[in-house]
Image (cartoon, rainbow, N blue to C red; front, top):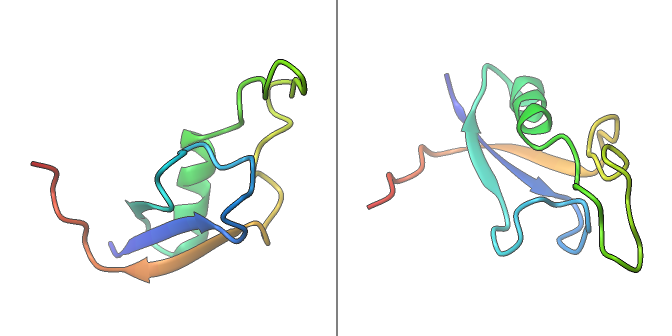
Length: 80
């Protein structure tokens, strides 16, 4: 199975669940499966900020196909 890099199209997208990490690399049979795995692992932002609460699920990338870029990439180096 190939590896895919998943990142937000807009680096400032507040829905991105991994602050400080511009992309996540995971395996998938194709880009659609990689996107699905990402959406399952990170279903939503929990509650936004105290001044702008976001209910669970409203901050999700699910159903917004244009918001994520999924590109085939090399196998990531293992953490040390």
